[in-house]
Image 1 (cartoon, rainbow, N blue to C red):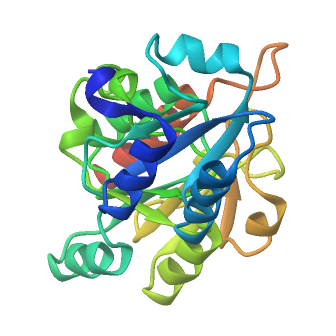
Image 2 (spheres, rainbow, N blue to C red):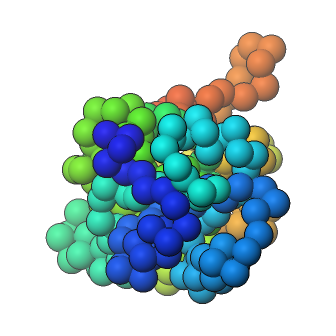
Length: 245
């Protein structure tokens, strides 16, 4: 699966982007220079494609082939349009439930979240174009194939999705420790979208300022937080519990 979701070489990646391939993320060798490399950088910037500058050792771990300082991850799925997805869910008459992921960076966490989301009836997952984990073979494996069963959308900024959800009558709830309310104090019975933050930073502070509600998990032990995929599961099953009453 890794070979199927990976391309390498400067010219090959340029051609893939120009051909409209679903390039999720590009790893670029630190310090690499040259006219063709600059052309690639400009192309990635124009298309808002997530890129990361890494040591050559990282690229050598990604592939044993002649990568020329560039390795790209190609998404094996087609991404959905946010507005089209939200409207189609609303038109079904069911109570919408969406999941917003604010730059989750670990592909296995991403896969585990997708699997739980599919099991709990989430209507769609929204991720940011830059800064988040790509859909790789590890994502697919960890999701147990759920990545092919649930719509995933990409947006320029998570805050864009927040504003669109709110304009569509969907309450946006942030999973964050920066509140006194637990998830048991919040109603999930109306149309809602839950935001989960990245493993290290959590939810962007500017995004937290515009959400409709905040909720946290009660922590009874000495460890201050849970793994994000575990926390996400707790939130989603509280939605299930409240909606099955």
